[in-house]
Image (cartoon, rainbow, N blue to C red; front, side, top):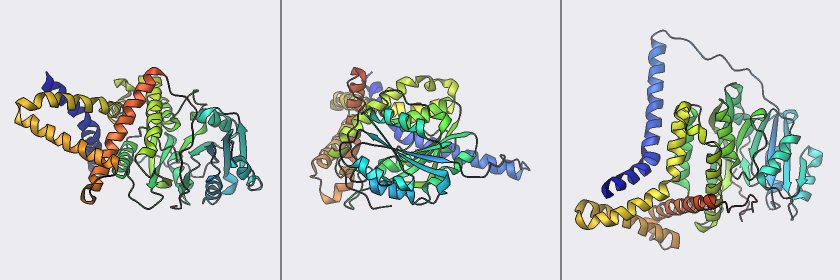
Length: 396
């Protein structure tokens, strides 16, 4: 029984991080081969051409005490390669107590609109901005994100297909001091999964720093919503529209400079994801086909990896004394956790720094998931957010 528990736990981890990505790649290769075979066999049917034209876009930015970067954020948006008469910029201040509002008001002559209200959390700010937005497409972004010049133009292109309801752009993370980004490998895996899920029309969540959604598919968020990007994607999928990923719509964002800087943010996001899943648990039903399978594989199983890690560790400890095989596995686990500890303490040798940082990130991320689940189960997480300390990125 202990061996069965061990392999079930290990299987959960392997499925979400290895088997599911490989399955997506295999399914895509098979679909391409079948399409080529049908084409060579005389099947020249094409999907109908999408209507041309650029939609009227409203860019929404929720801000709380972002004086250090809001001016640069607005300049970046005004510099977009997009027709000025089809682009409006709305900044929602969540009762900022610094110079955020004054900075935004300096851009009023250039068409930037400020909406200030009492503190209501990001969901409340977005609800206020949506009521003011005139665009048929809403582009969501953050105050500390920078778009490449053609980001909005590329982001809205997939929406020319009437079956697509939301498009997620590509977010590239950078260190403010030029050091390697700790989330690099994990973030690349996330981007890979989005790319392959996109080909099946069911990306499991957007990047909060850059995504576009049809306005009629984005009603006001429920009070207390923390992860608007995840909720938005699930709502679109629930209505029968597709969610796509556009890798050429690129935004840049500064990553946290150390392991500790992001921990509280990850806990909050984890709690928000569990809340969102509880609201959209009907999408886990097999009647939703591949969307349900993707939600189970990409999200649900990944979110129970912390529990799986604990089960694998405890059962392995019990099984190791009586089996050389399990003793070897225990040694392997011990080495991984030792490297993680070195990475978290900043004491890893230079030769093993990348491995230690990767192990530290993995352990810290799953610890945040575990704490986030605990807070969700107790309902102890508030809906207000405080900005993360950061410098202004110059990478875009």
